[in-house]
Length: 444
Ligand SMILES: [Zn+2]
Image (tube, rainbow, N blue to C red):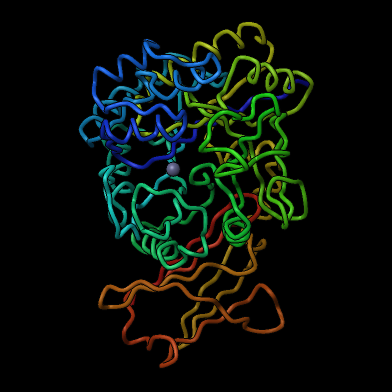
């Protein structure tokens, strides 16, 4: 039996990102030590290697100043124009999968909130900004094959919008505000994670383990391809996947080390970059995946990029690689896939996914909200609770157990929490380990 290759395109969906010329030269200096006046002439100088530089450092500089790499889409209008092209059915259908379907996008949506410091890269700040933009873009282009998923950037000490950080614990208020608002206003709950800056840490690993079963964030590459020169990425800074599997296998992580296989419940898949400075999808990587499928396994191939770059160029480049590989592996079926579908079909039987699907019953009786899990099991230990008050505040809180069962839950609305009179909406959501989802909303 030959397996299938599931090609899942994950986009870190963040809206416009502006970069000043000063910022580019700062990065050039930080990474290569080259200190030049920030001018357009000097960019051309660098691109043409009209400077004294070793071959080794040039390899790195070339990537930093590549015309594609430095071309950021800094305004919504630019992104919109690109999306009109890549979301059109003619573009999607330039290459069809084994089921006759064209290209499909997994949009991992970010809310830029909690960034009360500087915003030099002009990110579009605010709740649901990017979510609503893509929601209406999908509608306008009839792109109902696409799905909105989860993406989050932790907030740094300075709270500047352009400074990366790794701690979910330091960002917990904003994190729950984002989830609570999406759940109550959009009836949406996270199911598939893309780690911000490709970075999982001890605390985010345990956060994911409570709520989100699918985590295509692994960027492990063979040691010889590890970024060595890039000074901003040494010693495991940011996306540290050293030692994680690089053979396209899906694994369940260890609770002490997210890179190792262990006893946690979520599933981690591998995702490589498209036209980035490192950890790129290559012809050889695709061959590894198709070879694995030929031997009988279903294989998850994640590829990723950002909506603030020219995605068309990056997809076109990938399609050239893919076209070459599918010609050589014409016996191996491949699918352009939504992430959930790929995880489900690779890991479980369809009977299991259906028969054990999570189902919850929610009852509001005077001041008690009671949740019964009627079928299946919650992915984490409890369902997610979000509350909206009549004055427009959003809250998340823990459940109590209702009784001895670990799958029946209670929440009490009183003076210690919020009296029911003050509440407009209550939402309860949970996934199960198979990627099924249950959401109940109560409007008062
Ligand atoms: Zn990101």
